Image (tube, rainbow, N blue to C red; front, side, top):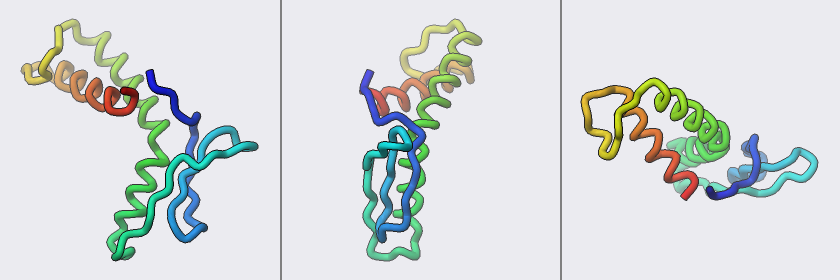
Length: 102
């Protein structure tokens, strides 16, 4: 499993661009920096930065939801295209987690 800077991460919008900081509060690290778009009024840079800053909490939520779905459904999931809603959710959660940790 891939390691990442421990959360929570926070968004610092005071630097002119969008800096995402993480790690222990005494020693925070720059996790990512999102540059403003050519049209700041479109809100894309802000939305992207907020999404990145929420990543550790979203990863935890995905792991919790995946655990819950897995214990409530005993089907084997390979494609996620079956008719069981739990299987579909499980497949989607596994794909999202795979993107985050592999």
